[in-house]
Length: 178
Image 1 (cartoon, rainbow, N blue to C red):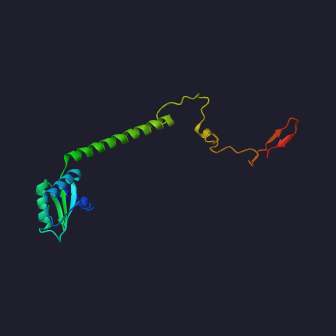
Image 2: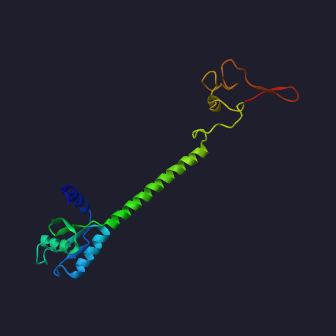
Image 3: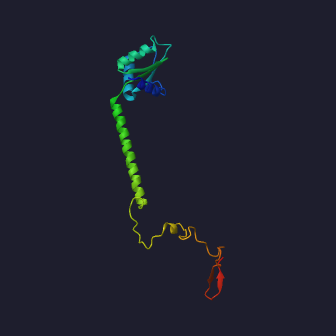
């Protein structure tokens, strides 16, 4: 194990809670079996050695556990022991999970593009199928006067030079709209 790998594992182990405690019973066959199972499942585990009740140093306990389980000792600080054992099956499962996640993201992105193409056909390179005579210019569709670059003035609402708008009734009387 290189120094960089060990440093990365120590950093990951900082946030781990101890999985087991070693006390006055020292290292038993049950502890070794449970430690091996935990290493299969997690790869990196932390074990707490109760300094008041053990007969050996934490370093000696870590060496015994690593021999019995085939793990590597990452660090021993005080009563904390960190062990690591690579599990190729776990790595393969994680790689497969990451691959499925990436494929799902790819499918979601493709579906979003297809939905956008249905919603906005011009963006997708499709042609506009409306009759050319019915097409409005972009400025007209926004309500902007094509010649002046601004909205046309409303009649009778104070536009300069325009007369108030009137309507004629059936009897011929002119009424001003208000």
